[in-house]
Image 1: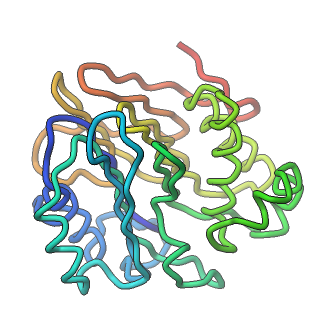
Image 2 (image 1 turned 180 degrees about the horizontal axis):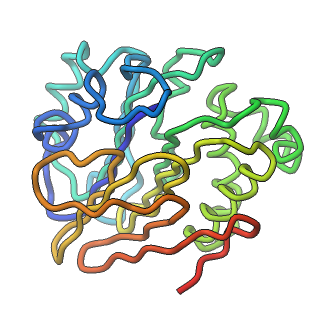
Length: 254
């Protein structure tokens, strides 16, 4: 399984949560605490997306190299300050390509997206869901992977103006119905709010009046809240909420 995190708050360097924190994404890449049978290290590439200013479109860096081997990113990360970011390290599912374009974050304007997990029975189990997408979306997938397809499903509805939390919840439950046993931890941000699902894997939240961070694993020793399984979290500085996900519909309850 991959590891990912998203942050919103006072401007920080990219390196702060990604490279420098006690259990930063860098450490999670080679020493994850909870992979749940999905491998032992995340060596199949990584990516980071961030915002040069509030309201701006996202900028992305990604590569198929392990995060610990990329000196260029380390230099960039320590020189780049941002009020919001999303980053991920990848452990490729067996049979899926190890290529730069397969790495999160996936980006569309201000949106950044990541998937930690796997779609069971890929690709046959989700062929019908894929068939609901416009042909152009299928022809322009970033990579022939489950994460890229999930992003296409989510992106189509975001472009239509649908509520992000509803989009994630209904996507997760639709995919789980088609492919039972899938691990579907989705992470999304527009630079002002973070949305994420915990579906058969770990997810933690740290939020206060100034900042919010959602991560596969806590990155430091500050108090964190574990997001319950089959729940969606919506977080921004000063406000966060947890919603149970209905298995059949994905609809949130207050």
